[in-house]
Image (cartoon, rainbow, N blue to C red):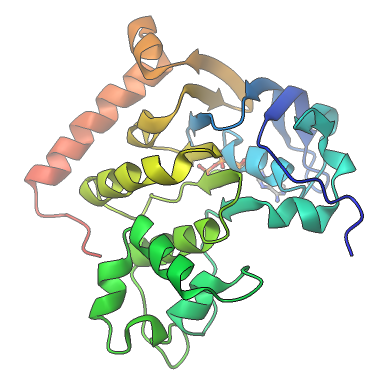
Length: 264
Ligand SMILES: Nc1ncnc2c1ncn2[C@@H]1O[C@H](COP(=O)(O)OP(=O)(O)OP(=O)(O)O)[C@@H](O)[C@H]1O
Ligand SMILES: [Mg+2]
């Protein structure tokens, strides 16, 4: 039994967090501070290697900070029992991991008892329900070895369904929409609005379009926060965010008018 089982409300605070990866000595995060009130959404945008996933790793306590402090609900992260902490976080990792099992069990993983209504609802909210119903055995279709192979986008959506099925107070999506096209991204983001209500969310992405639902956006570069604000304020500032936004909007338009649309 996990001793330090504190029910999480969802406030997240980074206070001057510094982090060096122990094995390589890479200085992945430098002086990172932000506060998220329960129910708020933060988007973390940045190029590859800027430290986005490291922020998720630290919240999940895959590693502990080497400087500064992380608190949840005003309590140091290290006070929480590891199991209790992780069981209260909905986490969609960047590298999706699914079992060779049925879709039903893949989504239901993490629930103490399988709950059909919740599994179906989370599949709907993650916008993968109709895909599943098209498979030969619907929710009982096996995936992986001796089963069917899902597309990258379908895998991500099953992984999102798995993360939300236990109704966590904190949701962390690490580039969870990278393998879907802009249209699917929009559909998922729209259904996410409902899911994000009453939850603290961290949406990590290299794409600015995923930042739409966030109250606050931070832009990371080489482990540092170089910009922080809302979509509107960052567009007005005319810095890195705006540059990224304009570049990506243009790229999306080219994809939409071309034939390279991702099929999922
Ligand atoms: N497990 C690890 N051990 C050692 N160094 C790591 C580890 N994971 C990441 N790093 C390094 O830390 C830095 C930040 O990496 P991180 O994975 O946080 O970037 P990211 O912003 O998530 O990038 P991407 O957009 O490619 O996912 C990089 O220099 C990376 O090489
Ligand atoms: Mg990453």
